[in-house]
Length: 138
Image (cartoon, rainbow, N blue to C red; front, top):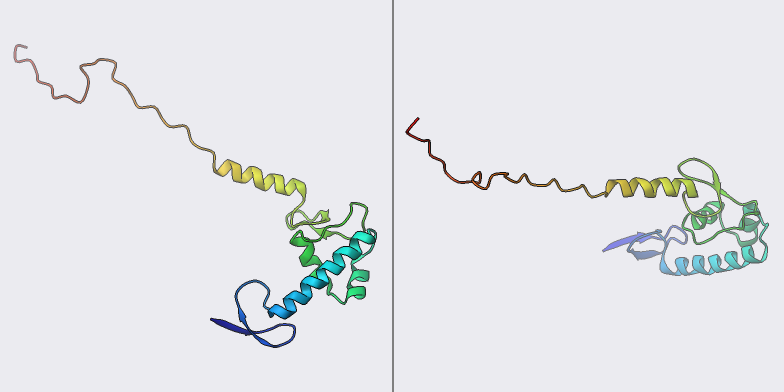
């Protein structure tokens, strides 16, 4: 059993996985996410600083929601984060479309099945795995 202090409120809780915050703080963060999501939907041209100030959420938390693909923005929105591979500005996720395609192609190449090599067949039926004797006449 792993008991830790919550990073937000300091209360002791049984840590299982993920963000090291207690269940009550996690619920409050999920409720805050729902509010932010609605606000971004209603105001598609909003910037990250404004969202942070209005809802008292850190910019790092907003970026975390974007990277987790829980939060995405319209194509004409000013909000964007950098692709972790090439640095192009993206609206959601960790990688841009081109980098996702390259990764997918790379994984497919790893799992290509090799053609099985055919076994050599003897052309003469007498050339099997049998024992042979030399002719004594020669």
